[in-house]
Image (tube, rainbow, N blue to C red; front, side, top):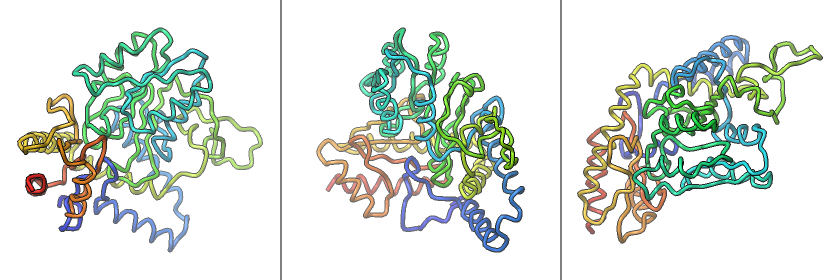
Length: 374
């Protein structure tokens, strides 16, 4: 199965939640654990070299200007929190974001309301011009626009380049949660004109939970007030005896403590696989899978698509609902049948990756057809 050893009795359509590890990632983690058990941290400098290599892979993945722009954090939520509580807000500022965002990209902005900052959720799910809805919600007091490149529930893909251009013209900061893009579809931080990009590695990037990409533009790194301090975020982190210290100029300033080396090994191995397979090939395959699901699901009586069919409006997520049957009922039945999926946004969410076969997709479609027909 193209580098995977999934149980043949399941059809895995849940990469938008937590992805299965590739064989190469599993083997890399086992090898790392074995080395640690035998030798401890004897070869720690080599581990650090691998960590630096991962930063370069992530820089390449999003086309960041420099590896110094990349920090390795625990999660998407941690990166968003660094932004929310690092920026110098003024009472009356507002933050615009889609109302249907994943809680990580909603709660963090709402938590600032006690500072006099208005959280301004915008309904984009009932418009064929969602970008315009967000743009029209911004005014002279808007300090930040935050959005996911792909909405986690409906799979709606936003035109981040358009949003980024408007933000640049209006001097509004732009934050992109790219967790549902990276590994499934190309993302260019420079084309998007994003000031911040956050994305955990355990979905389409096929890594382990607990390690996330955090991009912060060079111009803004020094403007984010720090709230976490430790040895690893210093300019000279290996100089343990120095009593004078300075915070690193690079994005490592956001990493206060020891790195998650196990997560580094896993994500590095997964990215190595994705690059070797080819990002363009992966994107084309994922989009082909989505288009196939959208076309065939629409033919099943009683089903309604919640994901837009237009090529420019979706990525790897396909969400459908039944006009009569509760989504949770369909979801539970699919899980019991070995079709791993998710219940999201009032529907059933499917998210196949490049390694998912067409035969598996068709088997899942037949099962859905037969189930709802009964």
